[in-house]
Figure 1 (cartoon, rainbow, N blue to C red):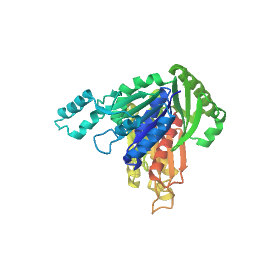
Figure 2: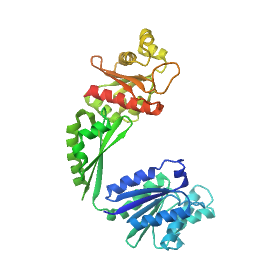
Figure 3: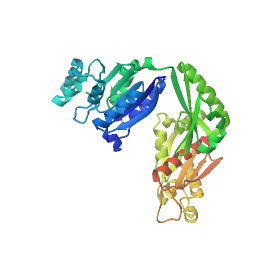
Length: 408
């Protein structure tokens, strides 16, 4: 299997000013080709450090891909450093120069001298023409090594990879690697790993556990000569894992909100949601999906106690006796949403997303309730954290899982 290394160039990456989504995209696409990415490195706009990192990467990897640093400014030096390290002179590519001139002509902007720098490419390379910008990509094959330079902007990089680079790299892969995620709710990463311990030592497919906020995943990856064979290997292992995990395993690859919508569609049921501490984020998760309108039509964001009373008929006595952050309030919110909407099911969430001065209840204390009018499911969460975003995210996931449980 060909070994690949990725070097992301840009001081803005080291400063944390932008998110490096290019590395994630490239690792995923290269793995699908059967190319093993073994290192991902980031270096600033410093020619000496870039040359050191590039020389080391080239000495130990079959393929080196560099992203960024191909622009027209003085600190864009990736092409120049790589060409010098490989002993290749730069020469103007006439077609690229025409592309650059046309790019500025249609925008009624002058093509200044610095932009012409982007038409200079290493001698003997294959130019990957940029349909979304002025910086061309570069493909160099020499001495059994492959060096690729790609522009930094994700929109340009992804299009160039898919349409120009992928066909060149297809011949480098040794089979394919397919990965899927078996997603679980209601079970911690540690307990999930215990139940699936016999699978974690397997080598092909491999099974690896990891956690995200409020849920745990198992990544199943198989290497094979073709995609069909790899998919079959994954499917066999996933089925065995599902038998072990039971209802904890809610999907393969699909997000929880999609699973909930599909269950509602299949059972021809509708859902109403009443939210307090999550501020409408559960409704947003559902309505981000195109088919939500068929099963979801009512959402109540009742942040204030008065809103809970006036819109959801939560009693003043309940709030006075138990507080707005309580199991009793969550149940009455759900029952009120069910009555006001006429939906088949209703879900409610209320809690402390972050510390407050006027209550003795801790941040991360959250109460959830789901009902269809006859059956009820409740859940109390205590995250023990003061992280507002974390608590809201976990509450939203657990709330949707409560609906899933009611539906299955």
